[in-house]
Amino acid sequence: MLRASLVIVAVLAACGRQHRGEPTAPELRPRTAEVSAGQKLFRKFCYQCHPGGSAGIGPALNNKPLPEFAIRTQIRKGVGAMPAFPDDWLDDSEVAAIAEYVQALRASPKSR
Picture 1 (cartoon, rainbow, N blue to C red):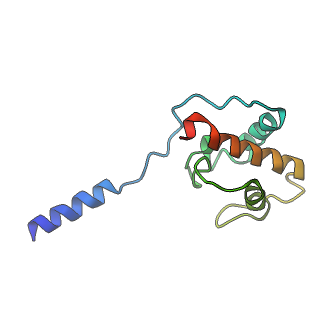
Picture 2: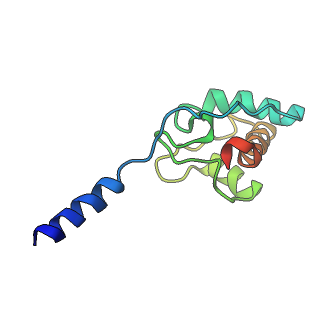
């Protein structure tokens, strides 16, 4: 019984929260004007919940294999606790730029 209790405690301790701090790798350097614009918009609208694309209040974005249209849909419609960002907040080109930036984050070395 004692051995089983110790195993359960060890398993629960190993399943603790993963680190949700700032990314430790260098920041992504945008290669296109659209990714650069997406980075600025991401910092303004998304960074509070997804710092650097990593998990924060919201889930990590830099490890999700979502196509661009799915990212744009999530931004527009919101998912779960994520708020929706309608046209009066972000126009279509701004949503596309954020989606490009999220895809660039996923491809960057710090995301791997």
